[in-house]
Length: 136
Image (cartoon, rainbow, N blue to C red):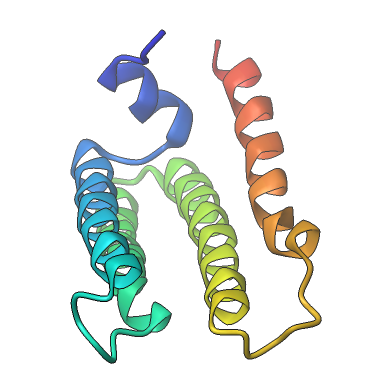
């Protein structure tokens, strides 16, 4: 079962534009992973492969700052603060996961185990589950 765009916007808290940015980053990331795995470009590191995700996080953070300022100007302070904390929590957990995964793939830190790498995703899934129950 696929979710509608309205349900995704409601549950994730992202705007449609932000969802589009993250889907586009996922598409570019998939292409770069295929290029990296097939060794079509020499010297392509995992940090370079993850650049679309980092750029999408940065653009989403910038968009969130703009929306927060606009909500403050419109007098909806409570909604602005709640949206800011929610989006920054999601983006920070996603960013930590990406950083840990890049470090593991580059073999810079052999002590990282996958339970530690996936822990931000587990926390994110729990928060999304709570939000999905609360929204409906």
